Image (cartoon, rainbow, N blue to C red; front, side):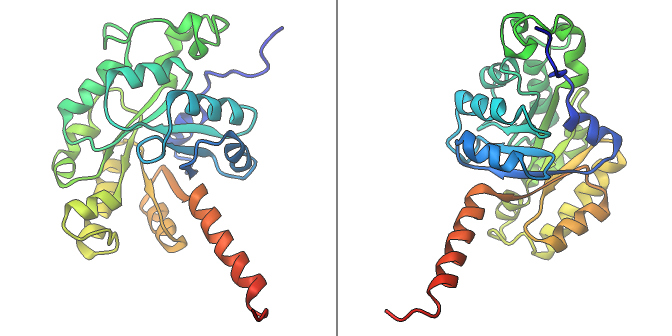
Length: 263
């Protein structure tokens, strides 16, 4: 039976390359049910947070399989840079990977080395028997993987900002993701992402990376900030998270239903 979908076609990567702003929503929980609810929304990509959420390769794979039926691409942030987790996710068919706290061009080059086949890197070839190549049904995986895989180093520290050119100019990366919260903490401003120094640094980074011809993305915490980054020219933007939605809805429902009731 023929496959009904080209599973190698990475709509997220091609979208950010073409300048079509891609909207994402974060998932901190490991539930495929939650992922499916989010996948029926209008968001373009699901930000599966394996850095702060309790994700494993198996939970990520379950989520990715669930949303594959919908018009949404999985983008996975891993806990930290490492050859093992990158290879496992790529072989599991995860094509978009964010690597947190990247601070130099050398680190970025190592990440691309792990994520690439020879002669660019040292990734072992097993795609023909795993989900990446759809168990051998995508016989052209080796030829197409370079154009479909999207590796995104995340800059979120002063040192990363100092090395922004070296990181963004590393051959083969799909774009750069900016983390304003950790940047604010590293700059000594707590979690105040609206501190003038943080705002200035973020605005500079967005414009500079965009000026290099590299897709750049970040997160927004309110509609005004989302519009601001969109006006600056970000290629991908995440806002909202499943746990935040649930907490807000629970609090709002409680207050709405109990405000006129006397105990």
